[in-house]
Length: 77
Image (cartoon, rainbow, N blue to C red; front, side):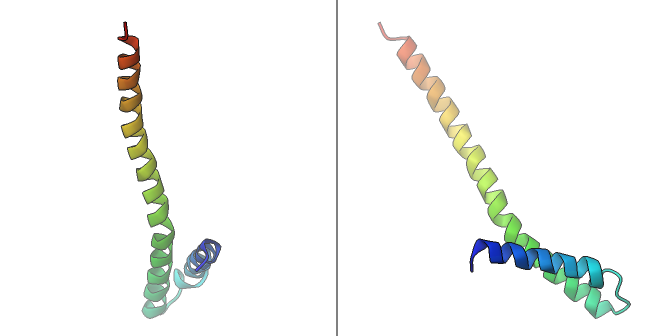
């Protein structure tokens, strides 16, 4: 499924929950719309969190490596 389709489905599920599910008098409708909204938002948030974690880990690895390289190059005679 293309990424934009996933984003659109997540937005629609969230809008459905806000528009219909949250104020519904039927418990089943409230719960089903909440589950649909949360599951679709999780599908969108998991890759976003993975991207942030990957970026932080890369920075945590690259910065000490650059510092070590700078120390090695500075110590050259």
